[in-house]
Amino acid sequence: MNKLVKLLPALALVLGAFVALAFNMPGEFDPEYAQDPDNPEIWYDLSTVTPGPNTYECDDVQDICTRVLPSSSAAMKTSGEFIKNGTLPEVQP
Image (cartoon, rainbow, N blue to C red; front, side, top):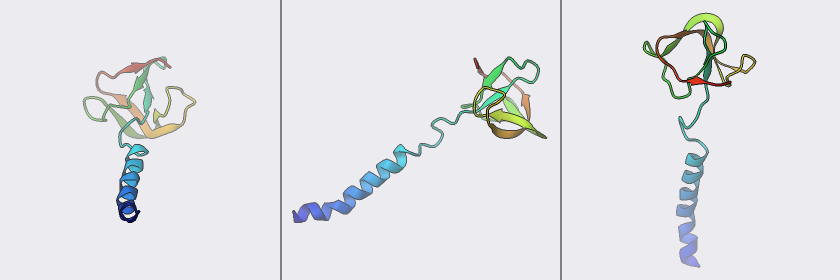
């Protein structure tokens, strides 16, 4: 019984680390979508795309650049004007 009591702090530390990682996976899945400015029927899945000169950019204009869902009524994720600079993965809304 005494050995078990001495192991409790170590077990608590392991359990705490497991819970911290299990519920907070950085970059696991952070949905982000943008509507094509020329064809509003087309939506792009930007969840795994890094903004840049070869992918897309959000310009400094008061507009909605990306949303949390592929829908024009979904909540805004990033402000600005969406500028497509390369090939992006399309998604069906």
